[in-house]
Length: 334
Image (tube, rainbow, N blue to C red; front, side, top):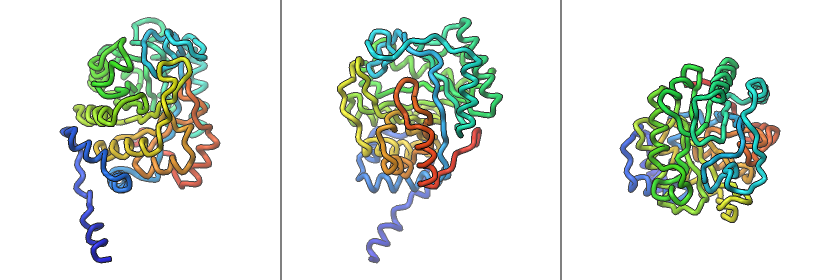
C-alpha cells in the first residue's frame, strides 16, 4: 500500500505549462502511453485549466450544400462523387437566423455556418454571409464559419462583422495529406490559419481519424497544431463517418479507444483548448462519450446533422447531460 501511495504522489502534473515547442517524440511518448495512465494524466491536466463539468454545446449548419470542386476523399459534398447529398444554393439570411434562434433556444452557445466552397469569393454570397454573421452575433452566441480558404482582407471583413471563430481543419498530417486531398496543399491550410489568427479571430482547427492514416500521421497532425504560434482555441476531433459514393466508403469504424487517445493527447499538449467531440459521436453510446469527457473533451455539436452526416438528437444529449451531471458552457466565457 505504501508503495502504491508513493507512486501516486509522484505522478504529479501540477507544473503543466502552455508550450508551443513540443517535439514529435514527446507527443509520441504521450500518445502511446498505457491508456488508463493517459486518461488519468489528461483528466488531471483538464481539471487544472478547465471546469471538468462544463461542456459547450455547438450547432453546425450547412448554409450552402454540395457542388464543391474539391476532391476531399471523405466528403460527400464533392461534386465529383456520386452521393445522396442534394445540392442547394446559399440559404437566405432570414432562414439561417431562424435556425440560429432555434439552436439558441435548444441550448447552443456557439453557432457555426459551413459552406461547401473551395475558397471565399468577394461576391454577393459573401455579402450575405457577412449579414448572417452580424445577425447571429447579435443573438449573443459565439458565431463561427467554415467557408474554405480565406484571404487576409476577407478575414478582416468577417472580424468586423462580429465573427468569433473560424474553422479550417488540417484533416491529417502533412505527410498523408496528398492521399486525401489533391486540389489544395497543406501550405494552403496553414496560410488560411495565419490569416485568421492575424485578424484576431479565434482559430478552430482539428482533424479526422479513420481515413487510413497511421498512428504517426495522427501524431504528426497533433504536432502541427500544438506548435502553431498560438494553440487553436478549438480543436475538433472527428471520427470518419464513411459515406457511400466517396473513396473512403469502406473504411472501418474508429474505436472509442482511438478517439480517447486522440482527445487525451490533445488535452495534455494543448491544455486550454476546447477539445470538441465531433463527427462520429452518433455511433457512440453514453458510456463511450463519458470516457471522452473524462479524457478532456469539453464540447459537442448538437442537432441531428453535422453538415450532411448524422448526429445525436437534442433530447439524447439532454439526457446525457443530466446523467453525467454536465452543465452547458456559456458563450464568450474567455
